[in-house]
Length: 66
Ligand SMILES: [Zn+2]
Image 1 (cartoon, rainbow, N blue to C red):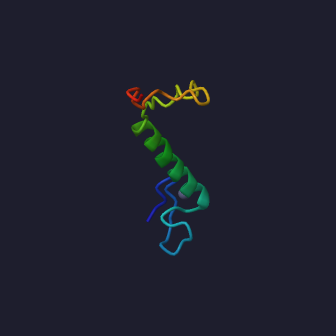
Image 2 (cartoon, helix red, strand yellow; image 1 turned 135 degrees about the vertical axis):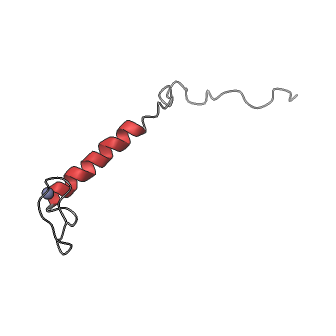
Image 3 (cartoon, rainbow, N blue to C red; image 1 turned 180 degrees about the horizontal axis):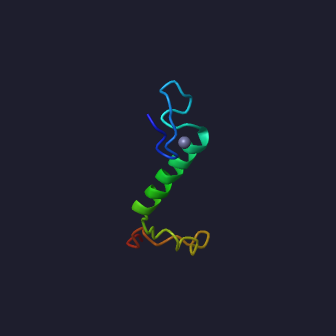
């Protein structure tokens, strides 16, 4: 078995198998993370928050009360 990152020989007994070292493991994880980042780039419209004044909530209650 070879390290998928640097192609060095690795044995299943290796601590970081299938990577040869922690470094390669981290590199692989990094690749994964960045891939995830690319795949899921949701544009969340949760940015316009904070325009609400204290106590100035939207008048959702019915104004039909007398
Ligand atoms: Zn390696």
